[in-house]
Image (tube, rainbow, N blue to C red; front, side, top):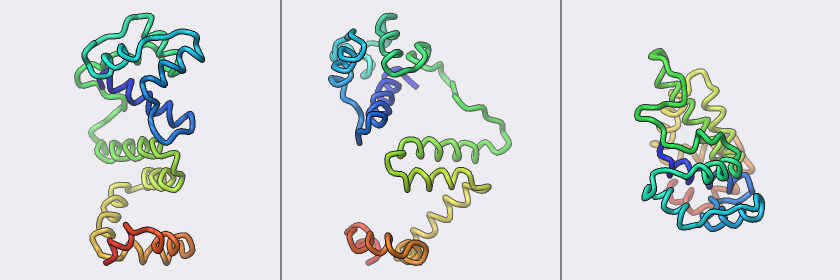
Length: 172
């Protein structure tokens, strides 16, 4: 992952940690740095780093952003070519990657507990690949998802199906 991608990801995570539905803006990061750490960098500088126009942070900027985002300063560099965070073996590597992707998705959607918990349940299942394939098969059958929701969760699903034009369109 490139440094700019990491900084955009950290702004998104920080926004979620602060109870926001979206990422912090670069201007908000600058304002919060000044307010919380009594130090600052310019929004233009952040923009150049995130866009890749500047490939590296200065050491003082790296330390400041690491302190703000509560990450190790060594995280705020480009990852080497071919770098992977997770340990992988050839046995079960694809399912392990799927499980990791589901867990990361659950973290990103932690603001929506139903979605987050569903992703975690699939990741914990002995055959998460089969769960995802099954979901695809359910969605390939018109109206089946809505009927299953009515059977499995009668009251919330019924209200959601009536209230949601997206669900009504799919069932037609």
